[in-house]
Picture 1 (cartoon, one colour):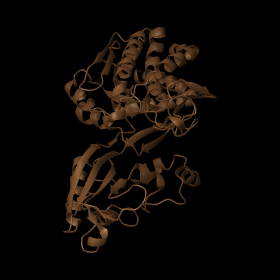
Picture 2 (cartoon, rainbow, N blue to C red):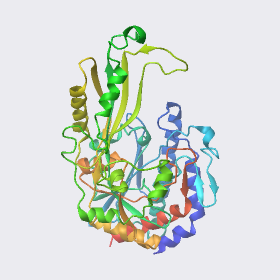
Picture 3 (tube, rainbow, N blue to C red):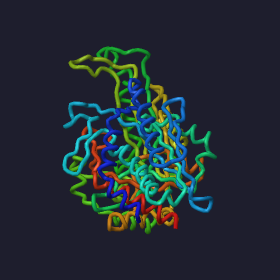
Amino acid sequence: MKALYYAQANQDKFLAELKEFLTIPSVSTQPEHKPDIERAAAWLWDKLLTAGFPKAEVMPTPGHPVIYAEWLAAGAEAPTVLIYGHYDVQPPDPLEMWDTPPFEPTIVGDDLFCRGASDDKGQLYVHVKAVEAFKETAGAPPINIKCIFEGEEESGSPSLNPFIREHTGMLAADVAVISDTSILGKELPSIVYALRGIAYVEVEVTGPDHDLHSGSYGGAVHNPINALCAMIARLQDEDGRITIPGFYDKVRELDPEERAELAKAPFEREAWLHEAGVKTDWGEPAYTIVERTTARPTLDVNGIWGGYIQPGAKTVLPSKAFAKISMRLVPDQEPAEITQLIRNHLTEIAPPTVSVEVRDLHGGDGAIVRRDSPAMKAAFRAYAEAFGKEPVFIREGGSIPVVAAFQKVLGIETILMGFGLPDDRLHAPNEKFHLPNFYKGIETVLHFMDFLGE
């Protein structure tokens, strides 16, 4: 394939461009970086035009802009792929934990260190360079391509779903592709075919209408923190099974074939325990660690506070107590429904001495895609060709809400073609992207487009 030779011959050029992209501190969560977001969007728009897209535009939203591009030269009979990515990045804090400046791309060995290197600028740019390789060698890609690149992923994508709903015709495609995940290892390619969703709530428990002296009232007034802790303790049994009535009603059980597929992924329990910093694992005994962390729903208290938490002592009986609780959901569980279930349950188990309010903070749907679709088969072949080894299918424990949005609004499935590594330190200091994966990613996408266009 001539495009492959072009990509290999231009690795230095591609790397120089990626480093330029990474120097732009496009932090979407901090208002002072709004000009940087706009600069990153303009930079990417220019590179899309240079790569050959005859149409590319920066489209405003109520928040940060969406970049849309299309190249439909392959004709109506050829498949159309919608490529999604995000050009915004996480804040670099804490700055003192970085070994190199977070927005000065630094190569150490085969790794490129910079905020956004893997999440998601490096992985997004894989697709732009693959399209350029086809333009320079074949004149055009063998399939029709549309791109949607957003600038709000790291701040919850508040503008994305409305944008998708308002532009369904423009975004119509046969399949979507996202490169924002990881493979199992440098020589262990993998394809994520399922993601968990999330329901996130904040719980407020109120007792007396003002803080009280614990010496004067303790023992006769129910402490809201004590009440909240007792309520939280009743949300799970000792094995981690969630006790909220109706919580498991829509949980799709793993069949033997899928469990066997998940078991193919290399997993070392002792290494996992060391990575997690724990002495032993915990959770539903009927499921493996891999199954618990990717294919089963969870409930975790992410924060709890109330009363006096400053240095020294203050004998207060607080008026209020708070907790943030997240629940990872599996496909078919609806975030709004699960939020209502926990609201009902906490209200029911609350003692009459306190009142409870449960606020919905945010939610996102899980997703699962077929492993035997033409696009998935093309991705499987592409990984095998580029990495010299067939990929394994895995589930991902986290969430990428846009996958469910593409399913529900556009009616298309998403192929998750990730090229990151598990130790890329996403959202943490010293984020990196393994450069051989950057180049192999471009090769994989070239093969994918070629195979899909057959």
